[in-house]
Image (cartoon, rainbow, N blue to C red; front, side, top):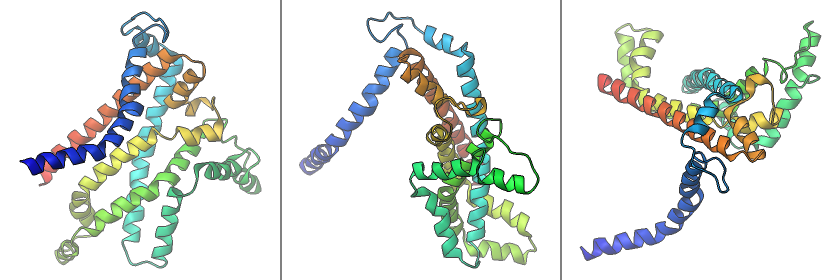
Length: 287
């Protein structure tokens, strides 16, 4: 008993700096933001209850930002999962230059964002490389970042940044599937589609749900690239919730900022909760 109590004290001693930092920089700001979202002003403000949230839900700019954010998530997450799984299945086979291809897919994880954005700006500028190629082929110039095409550009940047990481996760999951299962299926005459649906998808279910959660979280973090590509007020189709909150912070409107932040956090938690619920139900039906 004395040894166990001593070990707990030692563990708490080493955890204390991390717990203190987490409390100061995460827990306290979280509750402070909740307070600001319920008052009329951060200085000598009056308690207004849910009035800030009601005003926010009636704000057309916020609603447009929320719509753009969830449209982007709904499009980019399935594409990210599909591309990363496809690349993982390709690299799981014996193909030429497999190691070089793996390195290339991992490279976006280590390249600084600022330098990457410069490349994308050169590619999709009105006088950039893509438009140069289109003009050479006889097509008209497209304002990629100043029209509805901007959403496509952001989706491409998101896929380029995140597909490699998810590919590694899927590749690890594929390598844990016993080869004997595929060999037995081939003996029984199963084709590629049958093996994919009955073996690959079944045994990749836990990995797929983890990849989905990470993809959803990363889709809400695409603001950094979008802001560097198009600035504080980009085209209407890529004006995200993070843009709205950033602009509210710049204008010192803490009520709208904290209310929007709490609503976004609540929606992310609900999405992740739904994914976990689906995983439990599907996991029980499989195992």
